[in-house]
Image (cartoon, rainbow, N blue to C red; front, side, top):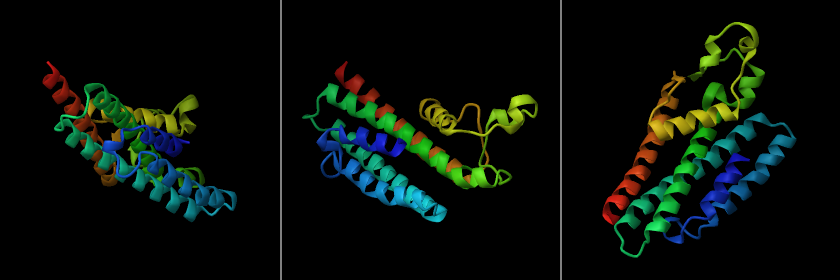
Length: 195
């Protein structure tokens, strides 16, 4: 659902900040959803993981390309303030969902491995994991927990309550924070330019 939401969000961007038609990202997502659904139906976990990571990688490339075009559009006089703000807001929101999906897929080897082998080393230490009494003893993160982490990373440019233990997730968080910082900088530059 998250990748379809990202495809829809990317499809409403202005044509001048997408590589190709704005709907192309949604089409790519839908093309990859078909083999993903087939892999899920036949329970081929290795293919589910490969297709999932491919989709997320392609969405990340589309996001980064659009952010670069957003920065370029800041310097062109043909881009109106309202359009720039709308595109920046969509890209910021897309950034949150893209990286929530990355965290969901990377932590402990992904959702399938987390479910099948709960003793795998964790990449992220959520506060609930440190509580060993009552209902928290068996607590497992859901997509909402990764979405919360991604939202905090985009707003505070760092995780707020979750410890990042692995290098690969540290790199992902640095990437997400950098993208978010560029988007906020574009908005600030445009606001200063208007004033």
